[in-house]
Image 1: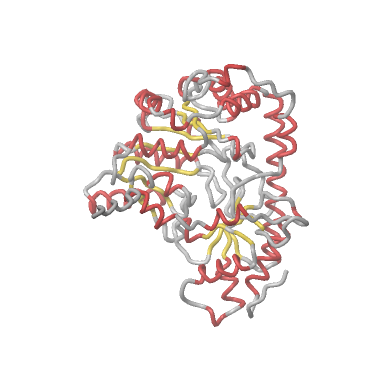
Image 2: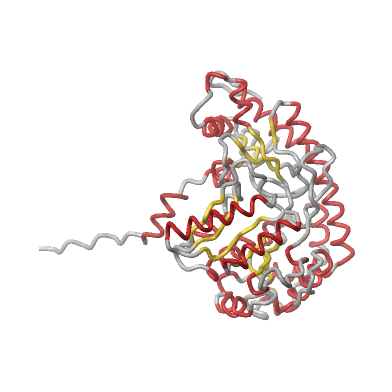
Length: 443
């Protein structure tokens, strides 16, 4: 009698966990079905993904100018942490634009294929499975999988209630969350992660708050990690009077003497946002005083190796001081213009938003409130979920606050870095989705 063949092996438990929790992510459907005026008018209008195409023509003109790839970029070149040429160009760029208290050296940089791998490296380097990383709410939604999905760190979400998350009072909330996690789990908090400037709130942390958070990290021996991927995407807010915008100051610019052990301070940056180049996949970890970080990450750099082409293009871009200086100024002017347009358009539509932005690409908007104003009978329950269903039906994509750790239901993130015509179509679809009373949305 023939033997029974063995049952096919299942995927690992961790793979099953991912399938269960992240297998049906709407964003992939959105990216596969983009709106086009003539090619796909029924596709998604996407104002949910953090991309900035406003300066693409300018950047492409520079990148496409006589591209000649040296032969060494077809080899492993100088190793997985980025070519010496690129790290020197990055160090020079950071010293000119981030105003570090101690100049950045090229051997203090670890280049990665995007900032998401850099965030994951931070989690791998500083935490053992089950140990904590503090993250204030609301947060960039992908921080959670970046920090926890593969290496098992625990993201400790910090709630602020009615406290301004950019105030000195918020520091106490971080400490309370740290102590509660350690008391309830018996495990340590190993790092505090900031997004500075902030995604999704579009604000910068004042220097006194950065210093106070560093002192908190020093008190408990916690690594202070500042993700500054939007560092140069700052602009003048000509719309809102309060809260008064705060100028961006990098964590690198702070003299750490008497504040925190410099081995605990690390900064992340990349080309995705400030240069509108998500597709180049180019990030960097700046750790000026911790050689253990460099030794450990150097050993696993194969898993975040940038391509030779991206390395070459990024180095050539950052070496061009005249171009990058002009680019940053022009980009900031366009960001200010588009924020003003989007904020006033929201005011016209009667949609509340969190004011006081002066950085990044976002408006944090209360669609739930507007929905209940239009449909009082719908008050109560998960209003945000019902609004999201309407938005998907109207083929307009926003990032849901529920996935960003929002402390209040009904908030969403709108990305305003699009041409006015595209944004206007997005606003029309949002307005139609909120107002509809039957099964049909027209816009």
